[in-house]
Length: 197
Image 1 (cartoon, rainbow, N blue to C red):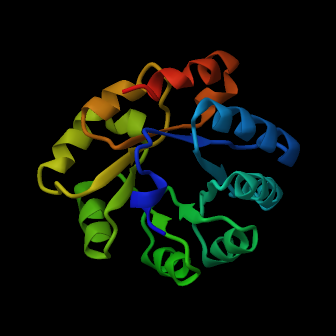
Image 2 (tube, rainbow, N blue to C red; image 1 turned 90 degrees about the vertical axis):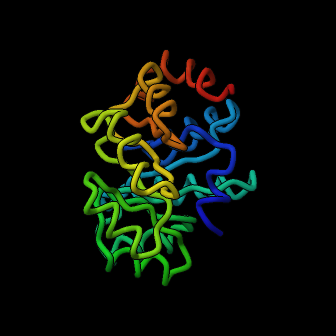
């Protein structure tokens, strides 16, 4: 499995943070029904692993995949694997965490915020990278880095809303991630607007 498969034809990834297992599965189900099939459950706090496990189980029943987010240690990689996560996501670039995740059979999406980090990740074999924090970097950062790194595929993450996500897609991001915005029910309702070509 690779991110080419996970993100194939997808423009939106949902990040469900700080919800109980029951609420995570409920919101995930609504997003899946709406056509948002790529989900990340951050596990910065140990108690969030239960929500990841519940979402991964529900996703498996639908033939879908769920990833673990905010994975910054090898211990969190192990917790993600035990919870049946299919991939890991990090806010930054750590080659040790990358190796641990790949060793556990999960592709890893590292966060990058500079040309140096993009280059380091590219040299480590990563072609999908998380541009973070995207709202602070801006759409021009995406288009600017695609010049020297044309085969990198960016997932714009951090501070995006349904209204601002299209500008990142237009700048060349392959996927936009919505996290805090999903706490707003009206934005959850509008997310389908991003799914149409």
